[in-house]
Length: 268
Image (cartoon, rainbow, N blue to C red):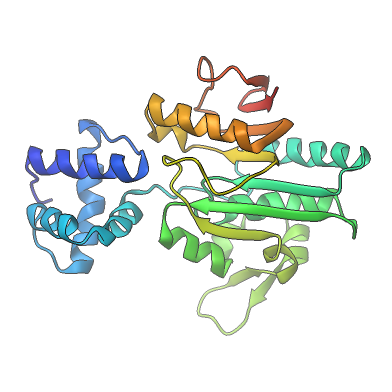
């Protein structure tokens, strides 16, 4: 691997933090160098100093840098009890007379989370009077391109039960590998947008029934984390739910969220 000067590494880390809120310490140097190196090969750039100069001159390249740095680890029905909980809550809301449902997948990665959410809510509420919309956002343009295409190979489809797969996805014919693409009835419930979670306020007005903000705050420092939580609180309806990753805790961060169960909080 190419060597990187400390001054160059520190500046790259500073740019990543300024533009995304992602906090990268010295222990992440090997990871940063490996991922930035891939981006440099695409651009035909041979050293980190040259890449930094290019980045400073062409600030649009920040998108390419963040695409390279962003971690897009996800799967269908990851932490399945979260989806079971929201499906149950949606059923109760419907019984109480609610017909409009709004959700936000804040770090949607390649789309498995919002499409999982769409499936479970549609399964729980198979009624013609349901108005369902899911906003799915991510900072990575590459990940969002996969979301929009909504086609997944058999390995990525493995967590989806066969009955759900057959109901909500169609096999893509004439491709070299076996792909399944979300049907229009599923895709139409989800809208994708690029969003930087470190720069609130966000353009949405709410109120939202639930926000999935899982496994992203671990990359933020407390300043960025607190701003994001305040914005989630603004957007959620009273009694709405914030769902975070198991490695994340809201303890001491904001008083307006009440603990419901591990990694699930309710807006007071």
